[in-house]
Amino acid sequence: MKMQWFPAKSSNDIPSFRKRRNDSAVTENSAWKMTKPFFPVLKTTEPFSPVLQTTKPFSSVLKTTKPFSPELKTTKPFSQWLKTTEPFSTVLQTTEPFSAEVYLQQLKFSLASESGRQYFVGDTLQIVISAKDTRNNIATNIGDFFRASILTKVKGKAGSGAVGIITDHQNGTYTATFRLLWEGEVTIKIQLVHPRQAIDVIERTIRKYPFDLVMFRKFYIVGNKIDTECNVDPAIFKKTSAVCNYSDPHAGAWWYCEKPANISCHKPGYHGILRYKKVTGGKLYGRGNSALKKTISGSPSVIYVQKGRDPLANRRRCVQGLTTPQISGFYRNGVWNSLVCKNRHFSSQAGWQQCLKGKTLYFMGDSTIRQWWEHLVRIVNMTETQIPGTIHESGPLLARDTVNNITANFRTHGPPLRTGFIRTSLIKNVANIIDEMEGGPNDVICITMWAHFTSYPVEVYRKRMEAVRAAIERLLHRSPETLVVIKSANTQTGNELISGDWLAHKLDLMMREMFRGMSVFLVDAWEMTNAQNWHRDAIHPAQDIVVQELEFLCSFICPL
Image 1 (tube, rainbow, N blue to C red):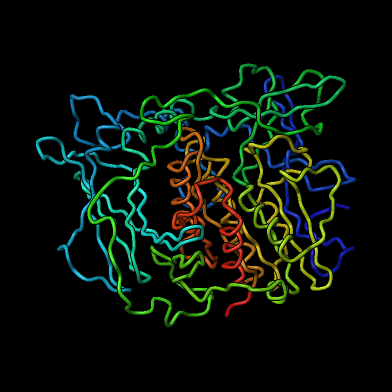
Image 2 (cartoon, helix red, strand yellow):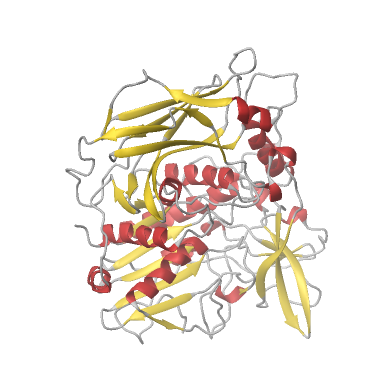
């Protein structure tokens, strides 16, 4: 019997799920070995069944003729797609070398309108950002990456904050637009994350090393430990005599590993990270290739906002069909207030339990959504069930509250996975998991995928998310009452050439466009981590932020 997700209806029953037809056969030759899947179910007494096979590497199927479809059609090889004679962004050329330090000194912000005016809650504030040289000429740096926010700090406590919307006018000037959402003293903060020249370095690095900025491995314990290299394209392997193909085009996944001598490709092993390529961004980056994230000066840096229109008046219930504005919420004294709909805040464990009673929640993706599972289990005081062969970092994870019939599952997405190790028999692609779900009014599907894809060309991510989108469409067609929630990326720190804010931001924009118009809900973790000012950026946000992400999730499960 195959072990899949555990439903809330019983603590003992194991559900039957839809099985996806798979017509492919296992093939083997001296160059390639088409094997049984890298993505089996949690636990099985049956032999592995073969995945949808392909003899083409990922590089040959990157281009599609139809958007948002798992049908893969080649228009040209990936190597041709990578080549470009154009720079990353079109800017006015200069004969002088670029200096980030000098540029930061030149950057200033000012009011877009007259100074000395009065400000009221509900008003719009516009700030102009530009850099001028010693001759008072505007430096035409086009394509810089800024973050803008307004904030009110409270010593020793969480404060108030909201994001601003940056507009690049393509002439060296930028505008930051804010909504004034609370009264009192408000500080304006404009931060240069990357100048355009630093972004060029990131993009050139991805083009130079499209598949091997991060290398992975499948390893076996057969007396001695045997390592084999793995990644999305076999062309980067040094040893090409035999390759195991674990690709699954139905799930938008391409994955290959070197074949070890005298070991079958379908022998279970362990997946893990092998190494990061040593790359450097030079003087444009801080220690460890970190982003600049430098605050620029301007005037006025502080304004006083008087009482005005209540921004939370006339909010609607959190239901399907709501439009998400560019500024979708704000913190007031550390509490998140949605501008989309009436969001929940719980004062007791009983409130959480009442909202989630009878629900089965499926958290799928990376460790930032595993945080949702961890905090929900802690808040509701659920009992975790140990699944044989698992580790907490990579799961799968299961917990239940049998009294209130609440079940919470976590499962990681398929490789690439920058994890210590996980049994290959426990890995499954998100699209396939969704296809096996019956769905229903008591099922809540929560997905985030981004953090492990930043080191690849965006097409790798696009293919995976197209398959996820198609699977969600099939799920909602057979069970339209199923609640599907997408969690966005969040701000972070790290090596900007491999996993920084710019790379995450690009994937996040693609994800938002891909799910536009679908009957899914967005939890905007990017805005919620960007708007706060009392924690540093981190790949795993602080507890108070994650809990409020969960409260916003519950606003759709049990609307006010």
